[in-house]
Image (cartoon, rainbow, N blue to C red; front, side, top):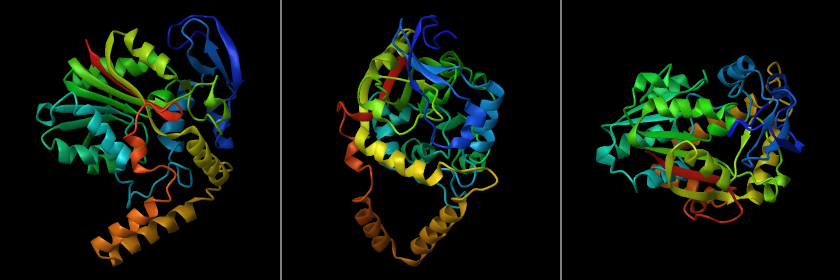
Length: 322
Protein backbone atom coordinates (compact mmCIF):
# COMPACT_ATOMS: atom_id res chain seq x y z
CA UNK A 1 0.00 0.00 0.00
CA UNK A 2 1.04 3.63 -0.41
CA UNK A 3 1.66 6.02 2.47
CA UNK A 4 -1.66 7.35 3.88
CA UNK A 5 -0.04 10.76 4.31
CA UNK A 6 1.96 11.55 1.16
CA UNK A 7 0.98 8.51 -1.01
CA UNK A 8 4.59 7.52 -1.72
CA UNK A 9 5.30 3.81 -2.23
CA UNK A 10 8.62 3.40 -0.40
CA UNK A 11 8.35 2.05 3.15
CA UNK A 12 10.49 0.18 5.66
CA UNK A 13 9.50 -2.20 8.45
CA UNK A 14 9.56 -0.66 11.96
CA UNK A 15 7.99 -3.12 14.39
CA UNK A 16 5.34 -5.76 14.98
CA UNK A 17 1.90 -4.45 15.90
CA UNK A 18 1.10 -4.93 19.59
CA UNK A 19 -2.42 -5.63 20.83
CA UNK A 20 -4.14 -4.43 23.98
CA UNK A 21 -7.10 -6.82 23.63
CA UNK A 22 -6.34 -10.04 21.77
CA UNK A 23 -9.90 -10.36 20.47
CA UNK A 24 -9.39 -7.23 18.36
CA UNK A 25 -7.33 -9.23 15.88
CA UNK A 26 -10.72 -10.28 14.49
CA UNK A 27 -11.21 -6.72 13.27
CA UNK A 28 -7.74 -5.19 12.96
CA UNK A 29 -5.96 -8.17 11.43
CA UNK A 30 -2.23 -8.68 11.89
CA UNK A 31 -0.59 -5.55 10.48
CA UNK A 32 3.04 -4.46 10.69
CA UNK A 33 4.12 -0.95 11.58
CA UNK A 34 6.06 0.67 8.76
CA UNK A 35 7.57 4.06 7.99
CA UNK A 36 7.29 6.02 4.77
CA UNK A 37 10.76 6.87 3.51
CA UNK A 38 9.47 9.98 1.77
CA UNK A 39 7.65 11.83 4.59
CA UNK A 40 8.83 9.73 7.59
CA UNK A 41 5.25 8.96 8.65
CA UNK A 42 4.48 5.75 10.60
CA UNK A 43 1.40 3.65 9.82
CA UNK A 44 -0.07 0.15 9.73
CA UNK A 45 0.29 -2.09 6.71
CA UNK A 46 -2.05 -3.61 5.76
CA UNK A 47 -4.94 -1.52 7.00
CA UNK A 48 -8.07 -3.28 8.31
CA UNK A 49 -11.07 -3.87 6.09
CA UNK A 50 -13.27 -0.73 6.21
CA UNK A 51 -16.50 -2.63 6.90
CA UNK A 52 -14.91 -4.50 9.79
CA UNK A 53 -13.47 -1.25 11.13
CA UNK A 54 -16.86 0.45 10.98
CA UNK A 55 -18.49 -2.41 12.89
CA UNK A 56 -15.65 -2.41 15.44
CA UNK A 57 -16.12 1.25 16.34
CA UNK A 58 -19.91 1.19 16.24
CA UNK A 59 -20.46 -2.02 18.23
CA UNK A 60 -17.25 -3.36 19.84
CA UNK A 61 -14.93 -0.57 20.96
CA UNK A 62 -17.04 0.55 23.94
CA UNK A 63 -18.76 -2.77 24.62
CA UNK A 64 -19.46 -3.72 28.22
CA UNK A 65 -16.37 -4.88 30.05
CA UNK A 66 -13.85 -3.21 27.74
CA UNK A 67 -11.47 -0.44 28.78
CA UNK A 68 -13.54 2.36 27.17
CA UNK A 69 -16.92 1.10 28.37
CA UNK A 70 -18.84 3.47 30.63
CA UNK A 71 -22.05 3.32 32.62
CA UNK A 72 -24.54 5.51 30.74
CA UNK A 73 -26.19 6.39 34.04
CA UNK A 74 -22.89 7.84 35.24
CA UNK A 75 -20.93 8.95 32.15
CA UNK A 76 -17.35 10.27 32.38
CA UNK A 77 -17.14 13.87 33.54
CA UNK A 78 -14.82 16.56 32.13
CA UNK A 79 -11.29 16.34 33.46
CA UNK A 80 -8.49 18.87 33.45
CA UNK A 81 -7.32 17.79 29.99
CA UNK A 82 -10.74 18.67 28.54
CA UNK A 83 -10.53 22.10 30.15
CA UNK A 84 -7.08 22.56 28.67
CA UNK A 85 -8.59 22.11 25.17
CA UNK A 86 -10.88 25.06 25.85
CA UNK A 87 -7.90 27.02 27.15
CA UNK A 88 -5.93 26.37 23.94
CA UNK A 89 -8.82 27.41 21.67
CA UNK A 90 -9.86 30.56 23.50
CA UNK A 91 -6.41 32.07 23.08
CA UNK A 92 -7.33 32.47 19.41
CA UNK A 93 -11.10 33.00 19.43
CA UNK A 94 -13.40 34.77 21.85
CA UNK A 95 -16.17 32.59 23.29
CA UNK A 96 -18.69 35.20 22.13
CA UNK A 97 -17.51 34.65 18.52
CA UNK A 98 -18.09 30.89 18.59
CA UNK A 99 -21.38 29.96 16.94
CA UNK A 100 -20.82 26.41 15.68
CA UNK A 101 -18.44 23.67 16.84
CA UNK A 102 -17.98 20.35 15.05
CA UNK A 103 -16.29 17.46 16.86
CA UNK A 104 -15.05 14.28 15.18
CA UNK A 105 -15.32 11.21 17.41
CA UNK A 106 -16.26 12.85 20.74
CA UNK A 107 -17.00 9.55 22.52
CA UNK A 108 -19.16 10.39 25.57
CA UNK A 109 -18.70 14.12 24.91
CA UNK A 110 -16.92 15.48 27.96
CA UNK A 111 -15.89 18.63 26.04
CA UNK A 112 -19.50 19.31 25.09
CA UNK A 113 -20.36 19.70 28.76
CA UNK A 114 -17.79 22.48 28.99
CA UNK A 115 -18.98 24.34 25.91
CA UNK A 116 -22.37 24.74 27.59
CA UNK A 117 -20.64 26.89 30.20
CA UNK A 118 -18.06 28.64 28.03
CA UNK A 119 -20.21 29.42 24.97
CA UNK A 120 -23.82 28.58 25.89
CA UNK A 121 -25.14 30.19 22.70
CA UNK A 122 -23.03 27.94 20.44
CA UNK A 123 -24.32 24.87 18.59
CA UNK A 124 -22.21 21.73 18.99
CA UNK A 125 -22.44 19.06 16.28
CA UNK A 126 -20.53 15.81 15.91
CA UNK A 127 -19.87 12.63 13.98
CA UNK A 128 -19.62 9.56 16.20
CA UNK A 129 -19.92 5.90 15.12
CA UNK A 130 -20.20 4.49 18.64
CA UNK A 131 -23.78 3.40 19.35
CA UNK A 132 -23.16 3.31 23.11
CA UNK A 133 -22.36 7.03 23.28
CA UNK A 134 -25.29 8.42 21.28
CA UNK A 135 -27.76 8.93 24.15
CA UNK A 136 -25.10 10.57 26.33
CA UNK A 137 -24.05 12.89 23.52
CA UNK A 138 -27.63 14.01 22.92
CA UNK A 139 -28.13 14.58 26.65
CA UNK A 140 -25.03 16.79 26.64
CA UNK A 141 -26.36 18.95 23.83
CA UNK A 142 -24.62 17.46 20.81
CA UNK A 143 -26.43 17.34 17.48
CA UNK A 144 -25.29 14.22 15.63
CA UNK A 145 -24.86 14.45 11.85
CA UNK A 146 -24.67 11.68 9.29
CA UNK A 147 -22.22 13.64 7.16
CA UNK A 148 -20.01 16.65 7.85
CA UNK A 149 -21.30 18.06 4.56
CA UNK A 150 -24.50 18.92 6.45
CA UNK A 151 -22.53 21.63 8.27
CA UNK A 152 -21.88 23.45 4.98
CA UNK A 153 -18.61 25.11 6.01
CA UNK A 154 -20.16 26.98 8.93
CA UNK A 155 -18.02 25.61 11.80
CA UNK A 156 -15.88 28.13 13.66
CA UNK A 157 -14.05 25.25 15.36
CA UNK A 158 -13.40 21.64 14.34
CA UNK A 159 -12.06 19.30 17.02
CA UNK A 160 -10.54 15.83 16.70
CA UNK A 161 -9.27 14.81 20.11
CA UNK A 162 -7.78 11.32 20.07
CA UNK A 163 -9.63 10.40 16.89
CA UNK A 164 -7.25 10.93 13.92
CA UNK A 165 -5.00 8.04 14.98
CA UNK A 166 -7.99 5.67 14.66
CA UNK A 167 -8.55 6.47 10.97
CA UNK A 168 -7.22 4.23 8.23
CA UNK A 169 -7.29 7.14 5.77
CA UNK A 170 -5.90 10.59 6.63
CA UNK A 171 -7.53 12.10 3.55
CA UNK A 172 -10.96 11.03 4.80
CA UNK A 173 -10.34 12.74 8.14
CA UNK A 174 -9.47 15.96 6.35
CA UNK A 175 -12.50 15.57 4.10
CA UNK A 176 -14.66 15.70 7.24
CA UNK A 177 -12.79 18.82 8.34
CA UNK A 178 -13.01 20.51 4.93
CA UNK A 179 -16.77 19.93 4.68
CA UNK A 180 -17.37 21.56 8.03
CA UNK A 181 -14.90 24.38 8.61
CA UNK A 182 -15.43 27.97 7.55
CA UNK A 183 -12.61 30.11 6.06
CA UNK A 184 -10.21 31.11 8.85
CA UNK A 185 -11.82 28.53 11.14
CA UNK A 186 -9.76 26.70 13.76
CA UNK A 187 -8.87 22.99 13.91
CA UNK A 188 -7.69 21.45 17.18
CA UNK A 189 -6.23 17.93 17.07
CA UNK A 190 -4.55 15.83 19.76
CA UNK A 191 -2.92 12.45 19.11
CA UNK A 192 -0.37 10.21 20.85
CA UNK A 193 3.28 11.12 20.38
CA UNK A 194 4.93 8.14 18.66
CA UNK A 195 8.70 8.49 18.08
CA UNK A 196 9.52 4.85 17.30
CA UNK A 197 13.18 5.82 17.13
CA UNK A 198 12.99 7.04 20.74
CA UNK A 199 11.01 6.43 23.93
CA UNK A 200 7.88 5.20 22.18
CA UNK A 201 9.64 1.99 21.19
CA UNK A 202 8.96 0.74 24.73
CA UNK A 203 5.18 1.11 24.46
CA UNK A 204 2.88 -1.58 25.86
CA UNK A 205 0.52 -1.82 22.89
CA UNK A 206 -0.59 -0.11 19.67
CA UNK A 207 -4.17 -1.25 19.17
CA UNK A 208 -6.51 0.04 17.99
CA UNK A 209 -4.46 2.93 16.57
CA UNK A 210 -3.57 2.76 12.89
CA UNK A 211 -1.69 6.03 12.31
CA UNK A 212 1.33 7.08 14.39
CA UNK A 213 2.52 10.68 14.50
CA UNK A 214 5.51 12.58 15.75
CA UNK A 215 5.32 16.32 16.34
CA UNK A 216 7.11 16.93 13.05
CA UNK A 217 4.96 14.61 10.92
CA UNK A 218 1.70 15.91 12.41
CA UNK A 219 2.71 19.49 11.64
CA UNK A 220 3.72 18.47 8.11
CA UNK A 221 0.37 16.71 7.66
CA UNK A 222 -1.45 19.98 8.29
CA UNK A 223 0.90 22.27 6.39
CA UNK A 224 0.96 20.04 3.30
CA UNK A 225 -2.84 20.36 3.17
CA UNK A 226 -2.79 24.14 3.26
CA UNK A 227 -3.33 24.85 6.96
CA UNK A 228 -1.47 27.45 8.98
CA UNK A 229 -0.19 25.87 12.19
CA UNK A 230 -0.75 28.33 15.02
CA UNK A 231 0.65 26.18 17.81
CA UNK A 232 2.28 22.77 18.11
CA UNK A 233 3.21 21.28 21.46
CA UNK A 234 3.71 18.09 23.42
CA UNK A 235 1.33 17.60 26.33
CA UNK A 236 0.36 15.29 29.17
CA UNK A 237 2.13 12.68 31.24
CA UNK A 238 5.51 11.16 30.51
CA UNK A 239 5.92 8.03 28.38
CA UNK A 240 6.96 6.19 31.54
CA UNK A 241 3.75 7.02 33.36
CA UNK A 242 1.54 6.37 30.36
CA UNK A 243 3.14 2.99 29.63
CA UNK A 244 2.61 2.04 33.27
CA UNK A 245 -1.08 2.88 32.93
CA UNK A 246 -1.24 1.00 29.63
CA UNK A 247 0.15 -2.12 31.28
CA UNK A 248 -2.55 -1.93 33.95
CA UNK A 249 -5.21 -1.68 31.25
CA UNK A 250 -3.74 -4.61 29.34
CA UNK A 251 -3.68 -6.74 32.48
CA UNK A 252 -7.32 -5.88 33.18
CA UNK A 253 -8.81 -6.08 29.71
CA UNK A 254 -6.43 -8.05 27.51
CA UNK A 255 -8.48 -11.26 27.61
CA UNK A 256 -11.85 -9.62 26.97
CA UNK A 257 -14.27 -11.50 24.72
CA UNK A 258 -17.85 -10.53 23.81
CA UNK A 259 -19.28 -13.67 25.40
CA UNK A 260 -17.09 -13.25 28.52
CA UNK A 261 -17.10 -9.57 29.50
CA UNK A 262 -15.10 -10.23 32.66
CA UNK A 263 -14.72 -6.61 33.68
CA UNK A 264 -18.35 -5.55 33.35
CA UNK A 265 -19.24 -6.61 36.90
CA UNK A 266 -16.23 -4.76 38.33
CA UNK A 267 -17.00 -1.65 36.31
CA UNK A 268 -20.64 -1.73 37.30
CA UNK A 269 -19.76 -2.21 40.97
CA UNK A 270 -17.28 0.69 40.86
CA UNK A 271 -19.87 2.92 39.21
CA UNK A 272 -22.54 2.04 41.76
CA UNK A 273 -20.10 2.63 44.62
CA UNK A 274 -19.16 6.02 43.21
CA UNK A 275 -22.81 7.02 42.86
CA UNK A 276 -23.58 5.87 46.39
CA UNK A 277 -20.69 7.84 47.87
CA UNK A 278 -21.58 10.91 45.84
CA UNK A 279 -25.19 10.88 47.01
CA UNK A 280 -24.39 10.24 50.65
CA UNK A 281 -21.67 12.85 51.20
CA UNK A 282 -22.11 16.64 51.36
CA UNK A 283 -20.58 18.46 48.39
CA UNK A 284 -17.70 19.94 50.40
CA UNK A 285 -16.62 16.58 51.82
CA UNK A 286 -16.96 14.81 48.48
CA UNK A 287 -14.81 17.39 46.71
CA UNK A 288 -12.20 17.18 49.44
CA UNK A 289 -12.08 13.40 49.15
CA UNK A 290 -11.78 13.58 45.38
CA UNK A 291 -8.92 16.07 45.65
CA UNK A 292 -7.11 13.79 48.08
CA UNK A 293 -7.53 10.77 45.76
CA UNK A 294 -6.32 12.80 42.78
CA UNK A 295 -2.89 12.95 44.35
CA UNK A 296 -2.50 9.25 43.56
CA UNK A 297 -3.63 9.43 39.93
CA UNK A 298 -1.33 8.40 37.11
CA UNK A 299 -1.72 11.84 35.54
CA UNK A 300 -1.89 14.99 37.63
CA UNK A 301 -3.61 18.21 36.68
CA UNK A 302 -0.42 20.20 36.12
CA UNK A 303 0.72 17.79 33.39
CA UNK A 304 -1.86 19.35 31.07
CA UNK A 305 -0.52 22.85 31.66
CA UNK A 306 3.19 22.15 31.33
CA UNK A 307 4.04 22.06 27.64
CA UNK A 308 6.80 20.83 25.34
CA UNK A 309 8.54 18.34 27.58
CA UNK A 310 10.50 15.93 25.37
CA UNK A 311 9.00 12.83 27.03
CA UNK A 312 5.30 13.86 26.96
CA UNK A 313 3.10 11.23 25.36
CA UNK A 314 0.71 13.56 23.49
CA UNK A 315 0.94 16.04 20.62
CA UNK A 316 -1.53 18.90 20.24
CA UNK A 317 -1.85 21.08 17.16
CA UNK A 318 -4.02 24.11 16.60
CA UNK A 319 -4.29 25.17 12.97
CA UNK A 320 -6.20 27.72 10.92
CA UNK A 321 -7.95 27.08 7.65
CA UNK A 322 -6.45 29.46 5.09
